[in-house]
Each structure stands twice: as C-alpha cells, then as structure tokens.
Amino acid sequence: MARILVTGGTGYIGSHTVVELMQQGYDVVIVDNLSNSNKDMLEGIAAIVGKQPDFEQVDCNDSVAMKRVFEQYADIQAVIHFAASKAVNESVEQPLLYYRNNLMSLVTVLEQMKAHGVHHIVFSSSCTVYGQPTANHLPVDETAPIQVALSPYGNTKQINEEIIRDEAHANAALHATILRYFNPIGAHPSAMIGELPNGVPQNLLPFVTQTAAGLRQQLKVYGNDYNTPDGSCIRDYIYVVDLAKAHVKAVERMLNAQTEEQVEVFNLGTGRGLSVLEILETFIRVTGVNVPYEIVDRREGDIEQVWAKPDKANNVLGWKADTPVEEVLLSAWNWEKKVRGL
Ligand code: NAD
Ligand code: WQD
Image (cartoon, rainbow, N blue to C red; front, side, top):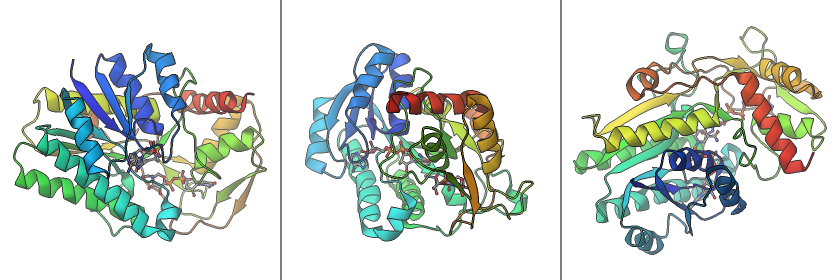
C-alpha cells in the first residue's frame, strides 16, 4: 500500500486523518514540529489503529530536514499538507509569522515533492476564502467568488491556493486537491484523539465544552442581532471524522488517476447551516449538562452566515458528511471529559 506523508499529522484534523488512512491500510509518516500539538497524539492514534505511525519532528520550513524525510521514506506517493498556523486573531497581531509559516512551508513541501518525484498533494484550505457570500451564493459552491481576506490567516490560504495553481501550471506532473473546510468540530468516537486548543479557545465548540467542564465561567455568544432566524451567526459545522474521510477519498482519486484535472477544489461541509444558539441548545440537550451563557456584542470580523453546497464533493469525490450533529456534539463532550479526567 502507498505511503502518505502527512504534515501537521499530530494536529486536530491531521490526527483524525492519519487514523482513517491507517485503517484503510496506508503507511503514514507524520511530519510535525509540535508547535501546536503534542506527541501524545501518536499514542492516541496507536490506541485506535493498533500501531503508531512513523513520526518525524521536523519543521516544514526546514528544507534540509524535509529533504532527509523524503530520502528516508522513498516510498512516499502523496502528501497531505495540514501544517499551518491557524489562529485568526494571532495572525492579525503577528502577520509575518503567519506569512512565513503558512507560505514557506507549502513552498518547501512543493519543492521537495518535485525533487523527489512525488506528484500528488492534498491541501487544507478554508471556507474563509469566500468571506460573506452574497445571498445568491448561499449555500456556497466552489464557483462562488473569492473575497478580499479579512485576516492575514485567511490571506495565506488564498495565496497558498494561488501557489498551488501556479506550480501546477508550470509542472504538468503535479496534481493537487484543494479542500475548503467549513467548521470542523467533534472528536474521534473512541475519545482517544480530539482537539487540544492552547490557552483560551477562540472557536465555539472548545469554548462550549470547556464551559460545560467548568473551566470557563460562561460562554459569550457574539451577537443575537444578525439577520438570521434567531439572530445568532450561522455556520456549517462538519464532523472531523467525516472530514478526515474526505482526505482518504481525495488521495485515492489522485493515486488512481480518476481525474484529468490537475487542480481540483472541493467544499467540505454538511450543506446545513446551524446557528450558535442551535449548537448550544443541542449540546445542552444531548449531554444534559448546562452551559451558562450571555449574549454580548458582535465579534469584529465575524461573517453573518455561511454554509456549504457540498454537491461536488458528494457526487465527484463520492463523499458525504452524514454524522448527526447530536452524535458529533457528544463526541466533543466525551473527549473534553477524558482530557479533564471527568
Ligand atoms: P492544528 O493546529 O491542530 O494542526 C496543525 C499542525 O501543524 C499542528 O500539529 C502544528 O504543530 C503543525 N505545524 C504548524 N506549523 C508547522 C510547521 N512549520 N512544520 C511542521 N508542523 C507544523 O490545526 P488543525 O485544526 O488540525 O488544522 C489543520 C489545517 O486545516 C491547517 O492548515 C488549518 O489552517 C486548516 N483549517 C483548519 C480549520 C479549523 O477550523 N480547524 C478550518 C479550515 C482549515
Ligand atoms: C463560530 C461561531 C462566532 C466563539 C474560524 C476561522 C475560519 C475557520 C474556522 C480556519 C461564530 C461564535 C465563537 C465564542 C461565539 N478556520 N462564537 N462565542 O469564526 O466561523 O471561523 O474558524 O480556517 O477561518 O475564522 O469559527 O468557531 O470561531 O465561531 O459566539 O466564544 O461561533 O461568533 O458565529 P468561525 P468560530
């Protein structure tokens, strides 16, 4: 079976994807500098699949170390490139860190792939590239216009996509699948792996689970005066395990030469938008745990509503996100309880 290099593979989405790859029989080597993850994830992965993936603690920007990885694992056939910095606020405060890490790591990975005859890459992009779609583009399909980025982080995803297109134009051998994720949430049903945010969570679900666990006093709901049915913002929350499975499909599609196109883009979402208050109400209902909250002012830069039209991924990739949100929220809670020893 083919070997897949997974950069950022000890991270949140990466670790879930490694599990799905290994369960399908792929050999995996993870490259991660552990800047936003923990080596314990390797044990979590092993507890689920029965063995640890190969792991190299390497920075993707380090071309000498990356060259060594490609030489050591000469059977690499495809790369899934998750490694990136992803905190929107931090990117506003430290744009150069984001441009260096997110742009140079992709350039280095593409250079080393080319030097070692590896021609397939799956890239983690984001629905953030669409900004607030106009009403005629909701739900959002892949043809919706890309809008001016609201943060340096968002801009790195747009530039990353352009880097991939330009390199594919120059290098006919390269095949790339760009996956635009909506809002990934939840944890593996085993509760062996999950999301481990550093410090105070910026994202909704980890804040909800930490509040339920008593680590935070109350959740701030950022605005209830939006033009939505209950006034709170709407997102397309996608289960991380469903998301992970899409990466396996994307790798298979390229390795089996099922497409003529050099660069393909897929939106990965459920096709269903849920509001902040709906998520909160559902979490409280399925877990039976109260989550104190207050409505506060809108958060600067928030999009009012966005959800995916995932038809292309459903029909072309043969993938569908179909785990019920109740199950997803319970998985997030079970993971939080495990981490906190509750
Ligand atoms: P994460 O922070 O949990 O995982 C990223 C991993 O990459 C971490 O383990 C980190 O240590 C590693 N890393 C960062 N820079 C590195 C470098 N230079 N070299 C080696 N390793 C490096 O994040 P995640 O949520 O799993 O996100 C994975 C990818 O998906 C990222 O590219 C992110 O931008 C993208 N994405 C995430 C979301 C989301 O909401 N989580 C949404 C859309 C897109
Ligand atoms: C979801 C909703 C908040 C926290 C971010 C990035 C985006 C992408 C996904 C990577 C919003 C509300 C949140 C809280 C709240 N990441 N909220 N109280 O903003 O959709 O997107 O993560 O590519 O680029 O910008 O996700 O989880 O931060 O927020 O009310 O304490 O929850 O206002 O409506 P968002 P989020």
